[in-house]
Length: 151
Image 1 (cartoon, rainbow, N blue to C red):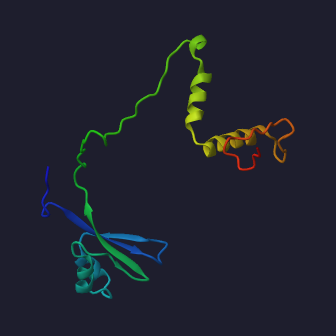
Image 2 (image 1 turned 45 degrees about the vertical axis):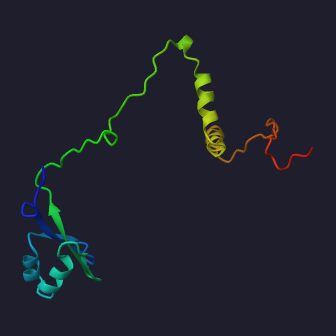
Image 3 (image 1 turned 90 degrees about the vertical axis):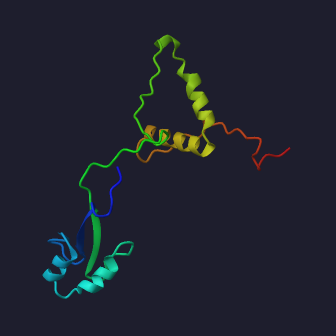
């Protein structure tokens, strides 16, 4: 459903930067704003706020025109952009689940930085506040790309 510019209704939104009591005001048109606040010139503001131009902005106020949404927005379906919540469920008997294999496959696909972050997070939950990890048990394995490795 195409709408022409005559069908669009616009309002003037005024943001008073120094007013805590009433920071926003909405006017049906620019003329009503200028009649309410004569220190603002209608022609100057209209030049700023005409179609395709920027809002009027100074130290005290920001004035801009916005379209009023009078009907629900149309849903545009393009296939790929349609979003739906799809449940991810795998139903198996507990004896046949074998989650260790799935977990291993998942973590092997993750980059090393993410794996290290996960281990650090798990260890931080395990340790009491102020406690340190006992590193006497940890065995350090050198990778094939370890620059400290000597032949």
